Length: 324
Ligand SMILES: NC(=O)c1ccc[n+]([C@@H]2O[C@H](COP(=O)([O-])OP(=O)(O)OC[C@H]3O[C@@H](n4cnc5c(N)ncnc54)[C@H](OP(=O)(O)O)[C@@H]3O)[C@@H](O)[C@H]2O)c1
Image (cartoon, rainbow, N blue to C red):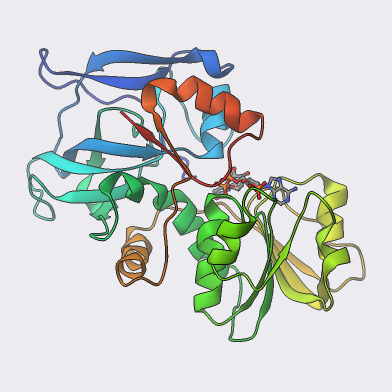
């Protein structure tokens, strides 16, 4: 997450209002208020977008609880939501990239997606896929960019690379398995019973049920690369390294993994950044049928506290979108 302020934007005309899911004080799910606020107006280079859906991410729980304050400046109150898809309804001065009526999708580093309308700099948005319901495009930015950067910037994948995607049942895993397969990798994935059919459909060649066996015990041969998408405890992180061949690497988006001394394993941890050019490449892959986007739950934005409770209790699987 880029360290930028998450603040609410200037108000538009006094009469125009909208509903937004806002946090006035850090705390549990019940601090989220779905409330009426002034609708913002686009400034130079910005567009006003009517939100078709916002994507839910585990990091939203951290923003709400105040756990991300060391990484991102967060001024209260703020509107939740780091990604959305919708329709441009007003363009600010100087915007040539989009016109009223365009369908767009993007990652919002300053939050603000969990609302009926959002404001974004036009250059951070891209055209939404034409082959998906617009609301489903909200599932792409955070998970898609994270998978892309993990595989193509922080790893070296070649045809035949054996990769273990740990936590393939979630949003990032959906993109990671498909993108790794497209790059010619042999993909082994951990998924629980509720996700196994979906993950197999993304092209995973071997599935390991993480609820029954640790991954390194289920492998016939070690892998070259582990892409870790699960906030595992340190002992499980070390066990993941036992799935690797000597000289292999582990890339983690959750906790930094410490390889056992002498294992020859290299470890990388990264935080994904916004990259509209990469997002546009993902949209192309979706429109040409290479990458599929599954939305496993569509919930009313007004139910966001319940979505947070479900996520914290591990009751969600795959990608949830929130419809205002
Ligand atoms: N560093 C970054 O820039 C960055 C970016 C995005 C996300 N993240 C973090 O990465 C993690 C994954 O994100 P996400 O959006 O994919 O989350 P998500 O959609 O909430 O994924 C949760 C999935 O994890 C699976 N899971 C839970 N425990 C597991 C275990 N022990 N072994 C294997 N799978 C397990 C479950 O799969 P089943 O359904 O199969 O049970 C569940 O569906 C989150 O912690 C998130 O905060 C970091």
